[in-house]
Length: 406
Image 1 (cartoon, one colour):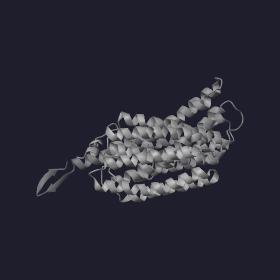
Image 2: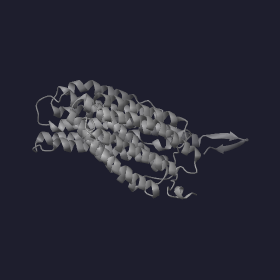
Image 3: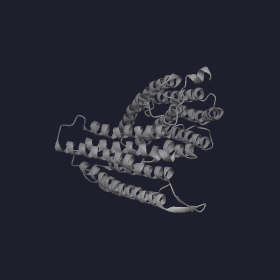
Image 4: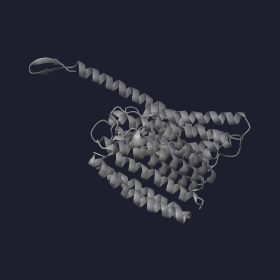
C-alpha cells in the first residue's frame, strides 16, 4: 500500500456516519439559513430562483463529500484534513450569500469558495482511489464538467445582473448533466448503503430544522401574543409532518434496495439527484412559514409570495417523495400526487386568507396523506408476512421426498 493511500482509510460494508461528518454538516445549517434569509429579503420569484440555484450549488458539494465519506473514513488522515479545508471554504461561501446577487464582490467570493470546495473534494478522491484504476478514471473524468461549469460560474460572477442568473443556471445544468452521464456507466464505489441512507437522513434533519429556525426568525422582535403562539405551534406541526412523512413513510427499507445489482446507479438517481427536490421543498416551506409567523397578528391576507412558498414548497416536497419512491422502490404513490395537486389548488385560496389560516391546509393535507400511506404500508407488510408464512409452511415434492420449504 502506498504512503498516500495509507492516509485515506477505506470503509467497509457496515460503515456508518461518523461524528466528524455531523460536525461537517454544521456549515450547511448556516448556509441554508442564509439562503432562506436571502429569499425572504428579496420577496419575489427572482429571489426564490437565486436561492434555489445557490441551494443546488450547496447540494452538489454536500453530495460529493457524502460519497467520499462512504469510500474513505471522513475522520481520519487526508480525508479529514481536506474536509476541514472544505468546511472553511463553505463557511466563506455562506457568508457571501447575502451579497452574491447584488452585483458586488460577493458573487465572486461565492464562486471561488465553491470551486475550492469542489477541487479539494476531487483531489482527496484521487488520493483515496489509488490502487483502483476504475475509480481514478472516474475522478479524472469528473473534472471535465466541473471545469466547464467553473468557467460559466466565473463569467456570471464577473458580469452580474441577469447574465449571472442565466450563466449560473447553465453552469448547473452542465455540471449536473455531465456528472450524471459520466456516472451511469462509471466506476464510483458504494461501499456502505447504510452510510449513504443515514447521511441523507441526517441532512433531512438539517433541512427540516431550518423550518423551525424560520419560525423563530419570523417571531423575532414581535411581542408575545396568542396569534404568535398559535403560528409558532402551527410551524412546529408542519415540521413534524415533514419529518413523519419522510422517516415513517418514505425512507423505510431503502438501504435494502441498494444491496443488489446496479446499486450505484440507483443511489445516484434516488439520493444524489432524487433528494434535491425534497430538500428544495423543505426550504421553500420554511420560507412560507417565516412569512406566516412574521405577520401572525395581521388581519391582511397572507399574500401570494408566502402562500406559494408554503404550499408550493410542500407540494414540491411530496413530488420529490414520489420520484424517490418510484426510483428506489419502483412504486408509484398516487396519494403523494393527489396531495401535491391538492396543495397547489389550495395555495391561491390561502393567499387571500389571514396568515394564521395558511398552515392549516398544509397540516391537514400532509396528515391525511401520512395516514393513508401508513395504513397502506401496514397492510402491505401484513400481506407479505402472510405470504411468507404460507410459502414456508407449504410442502413440496423433491426427488420423491416430502420436503418442508424454508
